[in-house]
Length: 420
DNA sequence: TCTGGGGTCCTAGGACCC
DNA sequence: TCTGGGGTCCTAGGACCC
Image (cartoon, rainbow, N blue to C red; front, side, top):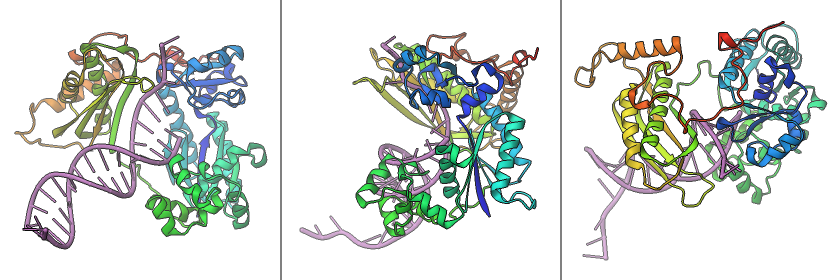
């Protein structure tokens, strides 16, 4: 069996280009929430040395000089494009594992077609290009980790490989891994690379040769498994079902810094309401709530505070969750402090209690119907149609800015592209 | 002036129990 | 001065991912 991973080239940029041809062939960057920094770059923008995560205020000159196109991120569009390309992969195989917004693992051989893996990979790429309009690369190997290395190699030398690398052949593998730096390997971050360097481990070939005990000592079982996988030994099975969400968070920078307790509480409540909505969508409830607020991490003496609370019984009721988060915001607020970000995290997620609720635990037996009505109204008429009084009304200075957002091409009927 | 958001896994250490 | 040996559960923090 073969592991394959398909990733979309410069995903957010490529997704923007599908519906806006004027963005094709020109340098393009997609910005983080609040239009703060570049989180996706087209090949042309990379050629102009725009770094991943570069803050806008630092690259403004280059952007202007070279006419680099900028877009705010449109997560609805990217999520929709993600559904589309996964549907195409699913035409070839019933073993698709969505790994991230722009990558999916799947297994080959896909169908008894008589074609080799590499040939099939090219077919999948062509189908995604034709049906969805997105450019891709595919890595193949006997384990997930090796397919990720193969994918990275395909990315690094586009011209040499034509978008598909297969690391099954041991000779080829030895040769390529010997020249591949460990920092580029899935699972090796800066800290691990730093600990491996003194041991003389700099290339992926050297990493693969590390004895298991040493790997475990330097890293953890995670590194030990990684080394095994580099040697072609599978350490993880195919996961047919997406794993249940264990925690979720809604955290945002403020559009304008916050200095008063009312604004902090209201912003916190808005995030809490959104977090509660997210877990209701998945029929989950939370047993732990963490609220935090802090100032700029680039400024000394910036405020930073958080509070942890237990939700007992577990809940997904915005009145409960936002109530607690709002009280926490008031409790952590310091007079004179300047806050630039706050957020709410929900943990200990479990399946929603179905059927009869505990009559002593449930504050209000009408709640399930009320929440269902809330979600239905907000789905039909738009988020925030029905809201808590404590959320406040209208757009506030602290709300995140998204000045450069493209139209909602695929998710708003009044904004679908028109062909003339 | 201006620097993203959202996840997972692992380990160590404390609390608590018998 | 002496003061066990586990087990489990929880939490905080580090490291990694995209």
